[in-house]
Image (tube, rainbow, N blue to C red; front, side, top):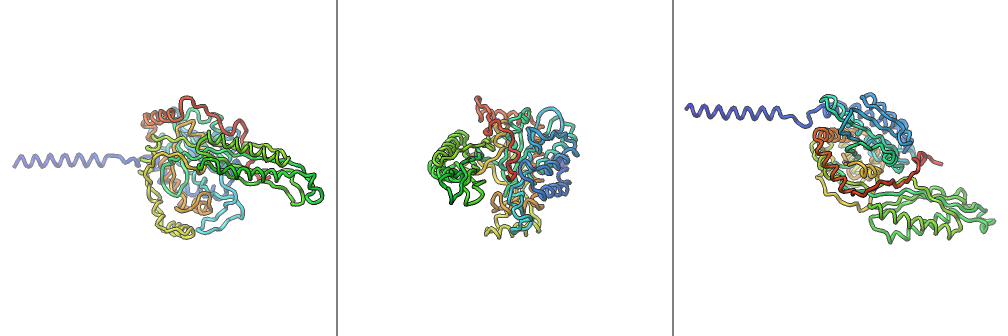
Length: 486
């Protein structure tokens, strides 16, 4: 009997100890950073909607950038403004010592995509700007994440530095490239990045390298009816150039992309235009292929000018590298994204999203994707698609990026549907989730510097010992007026 009692007491003691250990085991979500974000939804909802309500184009984001800066200063960050020759660029810093973790923040809008926060097409201003790429939530999610990290550093009396890189004009202006070129990322150990998406996933694609080039043709003006023989049409030069480029498309790698728009083709049909301009975006997943393709297109422009007896000049507006992935960082962010989870719609948000999906002729079962976190996919070379100036950052500092569900599934990139969703609480839920992923990732990096060393070793191996950074935009100054209508 005594043996039975002793055995029972021993079992109970083990059970009690195990229960106490389980009870005392702290959840990774139980920290000052996450607590700060959980109580700050309303504040960041107001801030992102304020930026959404005054969409500003690249290098013109005066108010949006100022709101970032003010909020960061109010939360203890020092802010350096107007860096790398860009008035709206900034670097905000909190803390001291190593490791130094950077977070990217964007805030520029797109032209012609004004939209109300309703599930049907309703521009607020016809032809006006709109946040159809979600940079209103992008930037706010980044500064929210950085301030959450600050809360953790401060509460735990930890050494380390958190930086926010306020990068203007991602949509074609390449603000990050100038910041890289000026050495503003030197001394940063890891860069964390995100982007609004239609789901929740770590980014593993390489994207495409890009050259953005304006070709200007000049000819001789004349009366198109009275003395056409005296004229040489700059527009003919542009059209001959475009025709040749369209012919060469058959002979370029299928993953390359070439698109253009005639910016100026003349003023009146009865005047032979002596000036015409066409803007080109040239893309390829590999920079060496992009270089060859750009040279071929330049030769086409020169041939078009000779054939039409006009002259041509070109100006590189911007250029980005393809992305350099980092598997160690991708695995780390995947863990944190799964811990945070997906976006959970309330009844009002469900109704809004269903109407968007209905208008896209999609089945609303795709809405289940917003609550899921996608498995980590294998890294893969791009087969085409978009470009980002994050590419240049990723070849200079180990960088990782991910998406959270800010947009309604089924929506196209740069669409009015995206502008509508990003300005609602759906957008705010996505940015809060992104901020939590930033915070949890940074906490692990501060707590375990070995992770940084592993990411750095992979980074050095992938880019190669002989790598020398040379920006694709050369030594030009920022094209601060590239969005200004002339």
